[in-house]
Image (cartoon, rainbow, N blue to C red):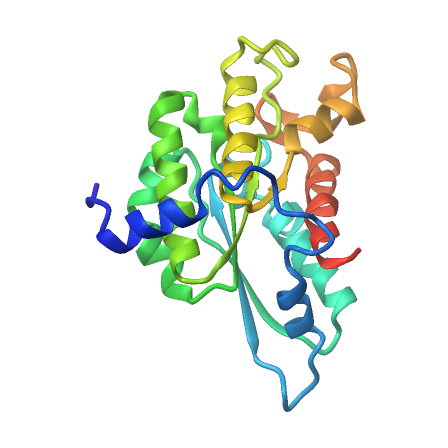
Length: 234
């Protein structure tokens, strides 16, 4: 992993520990204004979804249903909200990947697209690397995006039916808590997918939102997409 540059260290010092998550209704105001512009005053807006198999569109592995996954659902929602906008929704997610590997390709596969917004979703697989390594990797990606003036929205994990949901000692719950903390520290956006699922269905009915133990079905993806679209005024 490349060492942090002096610019990265400065940005970290400026933006870290701001203390609260960015407000849903105002965080992306400038981006929403851009999406509302008409030709010829508009420009192409780039949004990148970075993460693992869930944003990549895996349902029951190895089946991929990307048109029913939340990045595409967000694209459809934005087209309805902003019918004059020109946008690219880019999915740089990779099945099976954790944030440590995702951070190593962040410049090449995410920032190279000159994004206006990056959304990060890695916690399901970060159980393999642990809290400390995951925090370092997420921090590296947040800082790199912020240094380029890119808005960031972090996502807590969608569920794993094998996890002990609601147990603060469960590794998935701990990673979700860490993502919430990072969103507050850096004052970036947060979509709390795990909490949304837990509120939408008790443990008995959670399988109704899943295509397999650790991948949401179309109904589950719609929950995540709806939460993301709130940042755009839906």
